[in-house]
Length: 290
Image 1 (tube, one colour):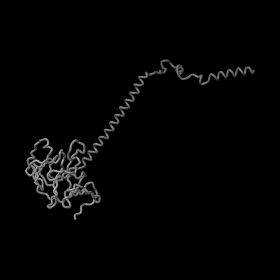
Image 2: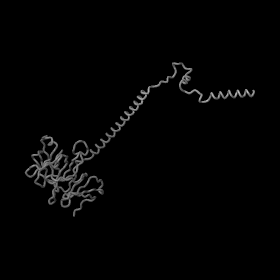
Image 3: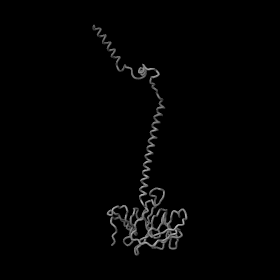
Image 4: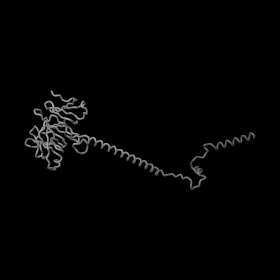
């Protein structure tokens, strides 16, 4: 082959190589899709359908909304489970706590029991005094008359569902109520009962607040230990802690309280309350008489 032939052959090859460049190749768009199915019947060809933008946005928003509803249902279910579990735990704690249990009263001298008619017109004598009192019950609040008699003891001077105490003087004139607003009184007694000890005071286990939030003030609410004069005046809270025993010590002007949260005898907690100064001191050792 001559030199001229070689030159023409090189020019021809350069032209072929130029046609094979990537920039000159057909791209997969537009009419190029038709070449894929060039040997396929028109009825069997794939159809590339475009959806309106509004329809696509509507579908996406619906998916998002469905997802939110699903998450909301799952959250509601979880909250319901937690609420039910919490209610069951609270009920178990309340049911396992006997707030109405009366603490042991040491060195108490009991008089014979009395029979009370349950009527305010027939008040009871306050021990060691010239005053009288009458338990005020739920039935009295709603003016429901019940023909019933009660057996009363010196160490438990109230009846079931007592919500207040009415006090009267020696001529049975009304002095006043123990509480300005009704609560729940699970027990009441006067001490010290031994001769020569005093001054005499009235002690109460009294619930003033709805501590378990059930809408009522009753025996299921946390009680506090209170003290008043024999006529119901000067009501004073002594402590809010649970008690296992109460004992007048010293000259009868102090009350030793043993708290029931101590589970071991060597881990006991006592409170010494002075009925005159109305102060309480805590100690791990019981009162030692002189």
